Image: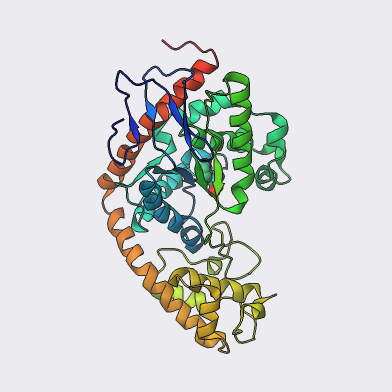
Amino acid sequence: MGGRPGDGWSAPKASEPAGFLKAGPNSWHLCQPPCLTQFIVRKNILMRVVSGIQPTGKPHLGNYLGAIVNYVKLQDEAAEAGGECLIFLADLHAISMPHNPAELHAATLEMVATLVACGVDPAKTILFNQAQVPAHAELQWLLNGTARMGWLNRMTQFKDKSGKNREGASIALFTYPVLQAADVLLYQATHVPVGDDQKQHLELARDIAQKFNNDFATEDAPVFTLPDPYIPPAAARIMSLRDGAAKMSKSDPSEMSRVNLIDDADTIMKKVKKAKTDPEPLPSEEAGLAGRPEAINLVSIYGALTGRDTASVLAEFGGQGFGTFKPALGEVLVETLAPISAQFRELMQDREALDAILARGAAKARERGGPTLEATYKALGLVRG
Ligand code: TRP
C-alpha cells in the first residue's frame, strides 16, 4: 500500500479493502469501518501523538520543561515510528473561565510563536488552534450523549476551578473534559502527553471511547481508539521559585514565583537569586535532598536544562552553597532562554507567518479528523447528505 511519506494516510487502491488498520497491543489488524464516506486507510500509525496547551498567560519555564520540550522530542520520535504529532492551542478550553477576548487573541498568537521558538517545527508537527477546526466542538456535542453526569461530577479540576462558586461556574467548565476527549478521539490518538493533573481527564476520554464503541459499534470495528496518557520518563515537574511544594503556575500572583520564557537576562538572574532556599549547602548524594523541596526544584531545573541527572549535578555542586549554585543555574537559564526569546520576538513581528502556520495546521487537522467525525455521525444514526 502506498502512502505519502511522513503522512500516514492514503486513499486505498481499488483492490484494497477499505478499513482502519487498528493497533492491537503488538500488532495491527484490519477492521471494517462503520462508515466512511470517503475511504481512508489508516496505515502504519504506530504512534499518533496529540496534545493541547491552553493559550492563557505568559508561557514560563514550567510549561517549557514540563510540556514543550517533550513535544519537540516527540515530533521526531513519532515521525521515526511512522506516525505523527498534532499539537494544538486549546483556545476553546480557554473560554471555560472568565476571560478577556483581546487577551485571549494575543495569548493565542504568543503561544504559537513560543512553541515554534522552542523548536516545535510546523513542517513536522501539525500545529493549529481548535477554533479553526470545528470538528472539535462538533465531536464534543456528539460525545455529550455518551458522557455521564456522574463521571463529570468526579472531575477534580472542575471542583478546584469552580471552588465554592459551583452554581456560578460556566457549563463549559463542567463539560471541559468532554471537549478534551473529543480533542484526542477525533484523531485516533495513541499517545497523549499530559502532566499528572490531566490524567483523570484522559481516563474519562477512555471511558467515553469505550462506552461509545460498546453502544454504537461492533467489537471488530470500533469508532475510537482508546488513548493512553503519555508521561515522558524525563518529564520535569517544575515548582514555584517561592514555594517548593506548589507547581510553577501562571496563576500565581507573584511574578517572582516563575521564570517567563521571554524574561530578559537581568530578570532571570534576579528571580533565581531570590528563589527560596534553605541555608544548607547542597548535598553530594541524592539522599541528602530528602525534605528539601526548594533544593530539589533548583537542582532538577539545572539537570533538565543541561540534560544531566540529579546525581551528576550533585557530584559537581555537592558541598557548595546556593551562593555558588544559583548564579550557575541563572547562567544556564539565560543561555537556554536567550535564543528562544530572540526567535519569539522575531516571530511576533510577522503576523502573516503566524497566521499561515495556524491555517496550514488547521487544514491538515480538518483532513485528519474528517473520517472519524463522519464515522461518529453515522454510528449515531444521524442523517448526513
Ligand atoms: N486540559 C489541558 C491542560 O489544561 C489542555 C488540553 C486540552 C489537552 N485538550 C487537550 C491536553 C487534549 C491533552 C490533550 O493542560
